[in-house]
Image (cartoon, helix red, strand yellow):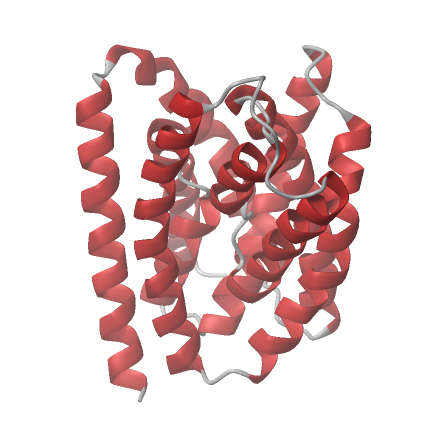
Amino acid sequence: MLPTNLLLLVIGGLFSGILAGLLGIGGGTILVPMLVAWGYTPLQSVATSSMAILITAISGSIQNWRMGFFRPQQVLLLGFPAIITAQIGVFLANRIQPSILLFAFGLLLLLNIYLVDLRKQLTAKNSENQQPILKPVIARILTGGIAGILAGLFGVGGGVIMVPLQILLLNEPIKVAIQTSLGVIVITAISASIGHALSGNILFTQGLILGLGGLVGAQISTRFLPKLPDKVVSFIFRMFLAALSVYMFSQAWHRF
């Protein structure tokens, strides 16, 4: 790899980690558009993002385990359906036209804006006395299954989807939902990475550099996050995702 490309990957990994820690955005939301902008194919970008996410999710889950917040049973109950559906996502990613994949990713970015607002509303209404909408088994299959498809198809962890669904369908407190979601992301990322690796889609060196850079960047940004007003962070988050979605739509348009 050329030194220039190596430098871009290091900077890109740090940047994605900083934004992930600062805005609460999953790494794949940032990494996939970034890799596309650097000339990698949409499929390579999605697959390599899955590997990078795996590195950061493992680190976060280890930290939760050390602090006593890791719940293996809940993680496995959500993760099992995700293992299967992640392969469905990989299957679809290998067969969807690049332009369609980019357009769908742009829609996912816009959906993320809504889902974060939904998460806040659900958190405000969340109560221990509320009854779950669905039976726990069905709710876990649905939540984990959706997260797995997103991991395989788009190279994202699926946490933005999992957290609101855990609050809505399982009546989980917000902090528990986030901690469980991170553990499930490890499982979905492993499954998606294996599927993409077998298909020859992953750029291993790039994924390793981006993942390690994301670890460092997240540590940097989390130190500054408490100092920023919630309104500022929320505004930056919406503007950033909106800009990324416009970029992905434009890339999809050029490939039609």
